[in-house]
Image 1 (cartoon, each protein chain N blue to C red):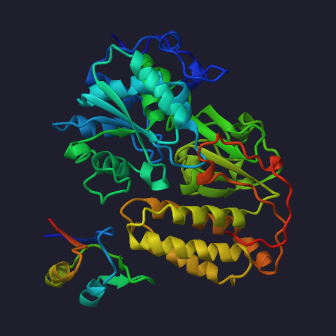
Image 2 (image 1 turned 120 degrees about the horizontal axis):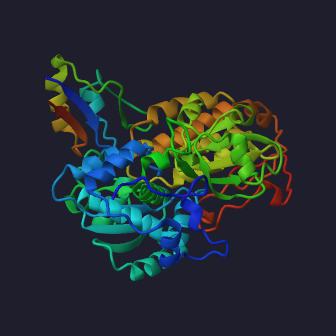
Length: 440
Length: 66
C-alpha cells in the first residue's frame, strides 16, 4: 500500500484514542481511531521514518531512522525492546501511553521489529507501573495477528535503571545497572545480539508515520522539529498533566495548555532532572524547538516541563533534586558516587545558608571534572542540572547566607512520588513559611 | 598510528598508579579517580601508556590503538 492516506488533522494525534473515563483502549476502538495496522515493507518504513524526521523521545533525541538502520544492517538481530522504564520522576507520558493506549505502542513495536528483522518484542516497564502492566497484558492477549512474539518484563525503578545499557543488562543478567559503552546495545545487546531499544512515545509516533506517512507527520511542527510531542507539565500550573503539543508551540502556550501558571513564575525546569533551569523571563520567549532550547543550553529531554513559582526557593528545590540524583547513582563509578555526593552536600549547604558563597566555585569545578567520566550519562545530566541551578539561582546564595529565605516548598516530585500522576501544584501545598531550612 | 586512552570507570578503584606512571596524561580528582584531559596519546608516550595499562591492578586503563 502507499503511505500517506488519511490521518486525522491537527491535535491530538497520539492521544486521539484517549477516553476521558480512564482505562485502556480496546483493540476495536483503537482500530476505529487509527485504522488497521498497515502492511509496509521494512525498507519503506525506514525511509518513511527518515523523511518524517522523527527523533527518539526517551531523552537522547537521536534520529529514529538512523537507529533503525544501525540494527537492520546487522545479522542475528535480537528482540526489539520497548523501554517503558520512565524513571524520570516527573515524567508520566510513557505510563500514560502504555496504560491507556497500549495498542498504539505495540503497533509501533511490531512494525519496528519487522523493519529491523527482530522476531520478538520485549516491553520493559517499572515494576510499580501497575496500570501499564495490566493494560499491556490485556492488550497482548487480544492481539492475534502479530507476526512477532510480545512479552512484558517488569524491573526495578531506580533512576539509572532506565538507561539503555542498564535495560539490556537487566534483561541479560538481572542487574539493572549501566554497562561500559561501547559496545552499545545496537552492536551487542540482548544476549550479545544487535538490539534496538526504543521509547514508547517514539514507537507510538512511528505507528502513525507508518499509517499516514511522513507528509502527514510534518503537517504539524516546524521544518527542523516536525510533528507533535508529549510533554509532562507540572509544578506551579493549574492543571498538571501530560499534554500533546506541536513542536514550535511557545512556552506560554505550553503553560496555558496546563491551565496556566498558578502563581507568578520565577523559572522553568526544561527536560526533567537531567534538564536545565531557565529564568522565567527568558523562558517565555522560547518555543518547543531544539534550536530555541539549545540557545539557552536546554533540550527537551524526556519531555518534562516543571514550573517553579515565585513563592518557592529554587536553591532549596535544586538541592533536593541533586541530593536525589546523587542517591540514584548506580554506585559503580567513583566520579559519580563521590562527586555527585560532594556536589549535593555542598549545594544543600549553600541552600541552607551554612556554606560560604565561594563554595559555589568548588561545585562548578567538580561539575566540570565529573562530566563524561561515568559509564553512563547519569553524572553528566546531574551536573548539567546543577550548573543551571547555580546560574539561575546563584544570586540567592548571599541572601541565604544572611538567613533570608522566605520560600515555601514547591514539592517537586522525586522518587517517592513516582507512581502518582504529576499534580503537586505549589498552590495546593500548605503555606508553611520557614526562615531558614536545612535540606535533607 | 593513533592511540587513545580511556578509563573503564566501573572497573576503576582509584589505586592511582596510572597517574604516577603517566602524569603527562592522567591526573587525579579530589577522590583519587583518574581524569584524562586529552585522550590522544602522543607517539613518544605510547610505551609508557602500555606500561600503565599493564600496571593497573583492576585493568581499568584502556588503550585503543588503531
